[in-house]
Image (cartoon, rainbow, N blue to C red; front, top):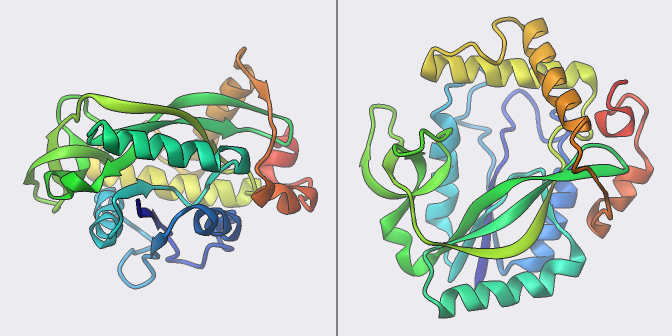
Length: 260
């Protein structure tokens, strides 16, 4: 079984360090697990002021270049714990044997050096036997945020694939550790979230993420504080790939203090 991991790095306006991603640590993790790692970096064709349709189109580019039996879409702030590498491989083998088209992991969002919580199930694993049937785009049945695997039917005016939900989904039960804004300063988070807010508004007309940079940061902080009050917070056993960076964190980084 050949495993491909594909990821998209939005590097326009700077590189991964500019946006304060743990991208080196993520790629170390992916190379430790996968037989093939595909990186779509967006340097040449992902503008600083972007439209939300750029996201699924770049994800689709990475997916189409995968040559494995399994393709896993990983964000550049996702990591797999070393204790789960063998178990995940065995789950993928079972998924192929049972002929599932799509597989799911659990998203464990890390909020600070000590705490995190399980946020959602992520359908990010594709059985590439069905590569030509599946695309990354908009699930019209659930009104997703444009970047989930779907049974492709047509492309819209933005060149984004639209289609129906894939069922059933194989549940691996494996946690994927999401470091999100963990290493970002408040200033960089403000810039990044405002950029995301404008991209979403261009696509949908919706300013719910804030119609100014300051309001966008307020929306983000409210989300963060709500998560910090989550009664299901758990102690974090960080993956080995990220330990060194955590040991060298600075107080101004979100995961150090949550800006409190």
